[in-house]
Image 1 (cartoon, helix red, strand yellow):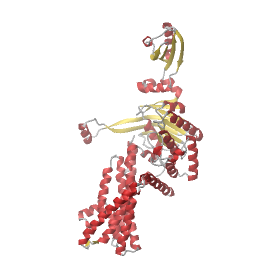
Image 2 (cartoon, one colour; image 1 turned 90 degrees about the vertical axis):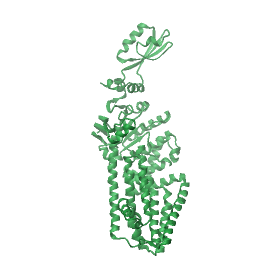
Image 3 (cartoon, rainbow over the protein chains, first blue to last red; image 1 turned 135 degrees about the vertical axis):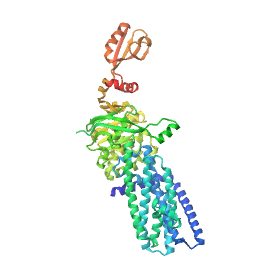
Image 4 (spheres, rainbow over the protein chains, first blue to last red; image 1 turned 120 degrees about the vertical axis):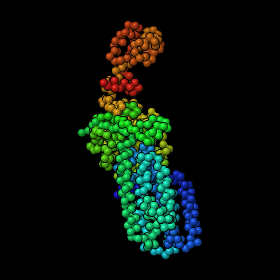
Length: 260
Length: 331
């Protein structure tokens, strides 16, 4: 296990070093994410100016959801997008062979090979928003701790879905569009799931589990989360992760029997 | 005990059978037709530890497919294969620790960073502790004549330096078996020679087994006492280079010097004229008719001097693949 951590550290430090060759990207991305964030906050601020709460969510509570969304978006930009869109490239350029011949888990290798700093501002802003909203809501350390489990489950779920989509590039060499659709669907996570019509709520819970990613952690912090939902989030994450591993092995079997 | 053992190794691919054009594209979309191609057919061989074997064949002969089955990247359709006593396709970690694959047209080093960074990553993946890794890097860098280059971003290296760095990265874990697919592709003559020298030295020093494919015959003649020739998926020959040219090149080169000036046309009935002009000419003639042709020439012309040589192996192989006379020659 130690070797995996050490290798990951090297992966990430070398990625950062490579990225430093193009430093201005970092600055630009921290400004654009700040701009995006300001826009979204302005939007919910506008909504809540007229009504104190919608479907049981106040402005501050909605801010929590927004904070988690921003954080997850940051994580997606830092490790998920950059690595999982690479699978395509490895297949097309044949460098997948090098990865398969390394004595280290290939799913691990593909998933954490790169690390890009552009998402770090988003992670930081997300944390700041959660802290700010938490302060206004008078939440204590216990409440913050309550969000950790569903947040971790949300991350694992997000990763697993993304990885499976990326892995389909073994068959369909161009899957950029698919991950693009996923990112856009996930954008629904910036508002509490209760704000959506019932049909969409079902879709975003069971089909694309956006609800588990941002709303459930916020509910956990507010002490409103059903035990059932928390367990659901954990089970969903575990199943998704296992599915991603099984799917990867299935995809590899295909790759290794079809490629020349 | 052989380090590589292949028995009736076979690989069939299912390829889509589609004619060009929109109509056929639509037809193909609705009703897919496939056909099976046999990329490798019942290939058997065995390689002993420490051997350097050249793997020859025209493009599409099945070389890369065979290499991929030996490294475990693809699953054989039939037959058995064992490398270092293991089944490659399982890709068990202790198997992967003992082999390496170098591909001339693909690279594993990180483009924007010094090769040293990629080497450290490999050291960590292969569980080589940092002190030992540094020692090995120094040693291999010395053999490859690499120094400062390892500290420069890979993208700034020349093709030759990059290939050497790739070799270093591929050998850091001291594999027992090296699979090299066109390791000198695109390199200039000097770089080719130094890669060759390195491979020979590495083979001697670590008793490593090397199986290499190359389009450059110079690589093969310089490195490989033994060659395997594959054509249309079938192993046509397995043996020494000399035996190869004796078997597939039943030709000799006849260099003649005449007392009088001679024209090309005058010689064409005797054999394939390679060059003719002034008093000298050179002919390619079948080995078994050599003496007969020589007698005829001496009867017909005033021959001052002559020499007989074997045509260079490059020519032999080149002719073989050009004329496609492989099957005929092998029978």
